[in-house]
Length: 79
Image (cartoon, rainbow, N blue to C red; front, top):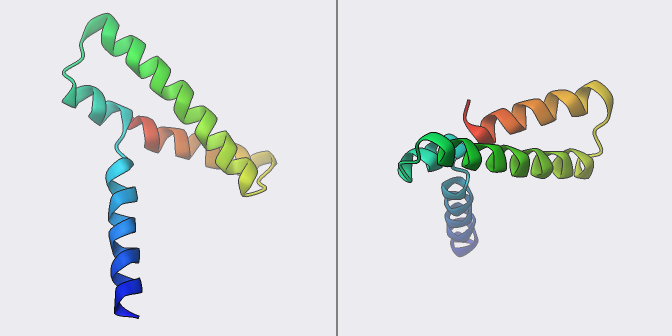
């Protein structure tokens, strides 16, 4: 039982570590100017796609889907 709890805690830490925002990643890469704009545009597009897939998987529609997607993208982009 302890092994299962330890594995679950380890996986949760791994998922959290991967959930770094676009803004933080751009800062780590020291992007500036056109490179920053291009990176942020692509990252936001990828975040939007991922959030829409998640919303569909959760069977959200209407205002709930819009609200979820907006917040999800904002969290992933880091604005």
